[in-house]
Amino acid sequence: MKYTSQSVALPYFIAAIGLFVGQIVFGLAMGLQYVVGDFLFPEIPFNVARMVHTNLLIVWLLFGFMGAAYYLIPEEAETELYSPKLALLMFWIFLIAGAATILGYLLVDYATLAEMTGNNILATMGREFLEQPLLTKIGIVIVALAFLFNISMTMLKGRKTVISIVMLLGLWGLAIFFLFSFYNPGNLVKDKFYWWWVVHLWVEGVWELIMAAMLAFVLIKVTGVDREVIEKWLYVIITLALVTGLIGTGHHYFWIGTPGYWQWWGSIFSALEPIPFFAMTVFAFNMVNRRRREHPNKAAVLWALGTGVMAFLGAGVWGFLHTLAPVNFYTHGSQITAAHGHMAFYGAYVLVVLTIISYAMPLLRGRAANSQRAQVVEMWSFWLMTISMVFITLFLTAAGILQVWLQRVSDTPMPFMQVQDQINLFYWMRLWAGVVFAVGLVTYVTSFFIKGESKPLITP
Image (tube, rainbow, N blue to C red; front, side, top):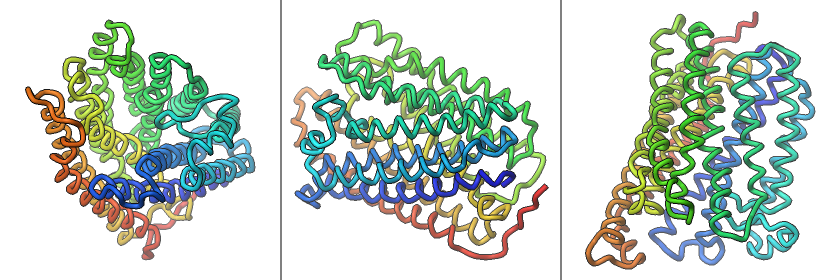
């Protein structure tokens, strides 16, 4: 750790890991509710468990992005953070607001929660991933503005690098596109049209910039490859991501009442979306192969390589499987979509946040890398979580293919619930794969508490 103000990243990383654990707990609860329909009912209905599961995913990734920015921006800018106190204040505001929102979901009927939080003044609730009450959304905007002010001022007073510029561009884009969550038109077609401006343009647009910047930063540190080489790759990746991702939004416009030309635009450009993820995979492996030094943090290198591979598989390959309009006509809203979503989020964003945490956490605790014992346990956690996620994806894909055939393609299509009974076996298999994932996550958390001889941090 070169600058003392980088230490503000530590609570953000700890909160991210804690919320990640919470997300998986509710994911397992949902998995059980798929196969044991009255599990936790009526205390925690499926719709509430799902809302908490997805909201925790979004929030812990945001904590991870913010922690990453507070760690890498000062180092890239070669100056202390503009205001560490503001960063810590926003941390507690964001954490308390997030916890209060989750408790609201769990303890208060959603309609009552909407009435209590001003949804009658400005209706913004009730949409998937954007279920947050109006007050929480306003709080998110305040936290985001303070955060962006802090890191922007830090960058303006210091060195400007490609990595920091790309990171800042992604974070500003994240905040700007979130503003569309306040727009909830009465027309359902318009509602869905602009809803995707938040959801798609986050995960297949500006988040990719954040991901690429974080991965490039870690690869520079662990490989010693010249910055100029990595920055050239970064230019190519973000250009491909923006060109394909922005217009690729059209693959969500196939069946919501928008003009038919979106079937062409959406199909063509979303079919190109795997290219930046493939480039990211080649980039990661190429940089590691060209490394000039052997970094003691082997676990961080493994997470970085895993990010490239799994992001390409989840977002690229599984996204392409059902992105063309003639195929999507049958597959949209099926378990194939769920398979793609699970592996894409894990590969692209979960892994990149765990990469920066794996690299930065030892430095924040005063050492270059964790002990060999701790790293072995951490790498075991990588393989447990990654392999189990592959199986979760495969089981959901198999369930989706059978679902599409029985419900939408067969000459004698079956009702939805009858089809769910037919694919119940795959839900059981997905549940057990989820248990293995949870074991991997527990293993990961355990690695932070394993002591042993670690390489000391040598400060310049």
